[in-house]
Image: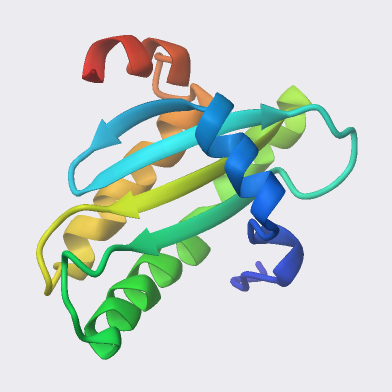
Length: 137
């Protein structure tokens, strides 16, 4: 298994992110707000991810960057089964995680929440992300 997060799996470009925020669907899994949309491109990685931690969480960049590192690590180590599911379904999803919790997140809690988010996005827990949109807002 390759536990990396290469550039092709990261959301980049103002227009791509603006399109996601303006037309994407949303749901919440505390401490995250998830904005997602399905891509129509036939090729590319199953997931592309973006992560944001607001200055409201902490004015110190070092603390915000630590939170992002924890989130990226939890995503990297748990993305494989969800990626395989999306590949079998022939789907591609872009999603953005907006962190809304406290300064020092517990790594175990973040890992559980990331797994839950990936299951909702792939629909592998019995509910699809569309159903999650209806229940969490």
